[in-house]
Length: 125
Image 1 (cartoon, helix red, strand yellow):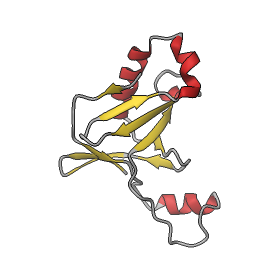
Image 2 (tube, one colour; image 1 turned 90 degrees about the vertical axis):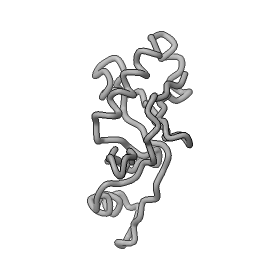
Image 3 (tube, rainbow, N blue to C red; image 1 turned 180 degrees about the vertical axis):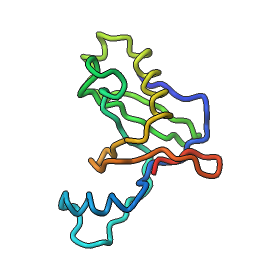
């Protein structure tokens, strides 16, 4: 199941600041300061941020779609668990949280991807 926003002003995911250079170096992803993060269309949060106990460890994957909407879904690996819950309720709640939080994680493991409003468009940076 995938839920979409009604707004269509989302642009992309990215990284907000230079702290990511330090993080990338510490994780061994780079050895010099040439680190650059490309814009991306997907990011995730741990379900802990949606409901502390019930969804802890379940990823919610957010996608900025070509039409500017933001959608959310859970990975197929979590489908059996989510089938036992009201998926629509939790996906809608996760989508609402996405507009309020500023700590997403890239699908590549890079942390601290943020949602920022720029020139009328939401950007995950």
